[in-house]
Image 1: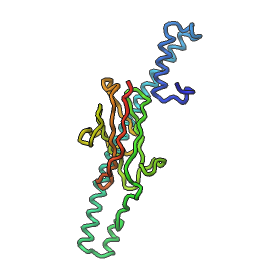
Image 2: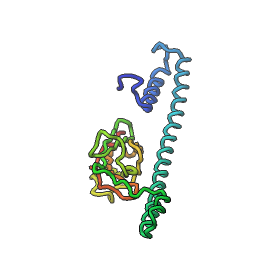
Image 3: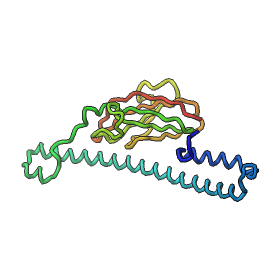
Image 4: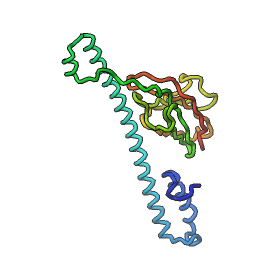
Amino acid sequence: MADSISSLSDSELAGMAAGLISAVTAAPATFGLTPAFVTTLTDEKDNFDQELSIHIDRQTQAKAQTIKKDNQRSVLEGLIRDARQMAKAAKISEANMAQMGIPSSSSPAPANATVPAAAVNTSERLRHRLDWTDAASLDNKKKPRGVMGAEIWVKIGDPPPGNEKDCVFLTLDAFTPYVAEYDPADAGKTAHYMIRWRMRDGSVSAWGETVSATITG
């Protein structure tokens, strides 16, 4: 149990409120409460559940929109690079190259842009939170230069995957962490995650170390 109410996550707070209401509703006076207070508590808990649901939906929509935007950016960047290469192949003048306004070359990903490393938080029921970062710079939560996001693949159930062909593609995640939701039927099973960088030019890195965690029921 958390040390304080304020340190609870939103879902933990909702769960605690539900448990409290269940415990006191039948006989509020036994706990020093009044029926009116329990009614107010129940109403405000329902209001919080509604706002929390809206919040989660909007976060999911925002993340999906970010992925769509980044994918479209990759397409546009590729076309601009093509324009630069076509102009260079045509040996146009430096003045015309300058007029196009395209940088002379792309900045390569730094040497420390190795592979992603991931950690799985299993504290919430039927939910895994994947925190990922660069394996060569674990304390830096920023994506390495040139990286669009982390490709996350998953295999449910043992044995662990031999390669991505044993997995299903889960998401291209632009911002850590990623939250994976599971059905009650998956409770007790092991989820194995494979993760690699997707670069803005469409290329991918080598795979990071596979991480595995039990789906909490």
